[in-house]
Image (cartoon, rainbow, N blue to C red; front, side, top):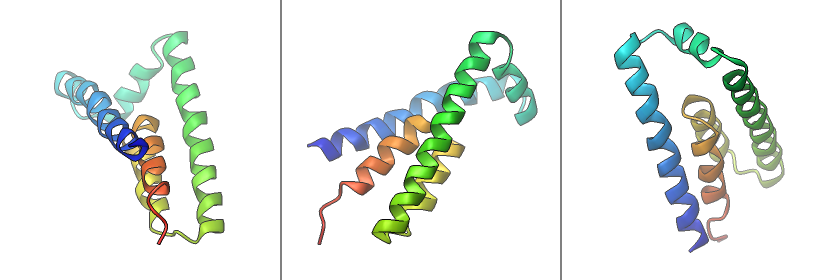
Length: 104
């Protein structure tokens, strides 16, 4: 049951942010640097960007440390890629979903 909650959160954590990103790109053109500039339009958005950046860095370090211990090498690229291409809202629940799979 818990695994399905993680999977559902990963799906929602993919769809919800991407809706806004795609809407912004459609309105403003597909310019990543313009989007980064938009993220820093005021102190509140800059704070949120830093909050998510630090969370993404912490998640990446945790994943890499766990991969080193668990020798589960295929999980890291998927979850780290999801974190930096989509967001922590996808990467974290996806990692938890994959990490809690049944042990054989």
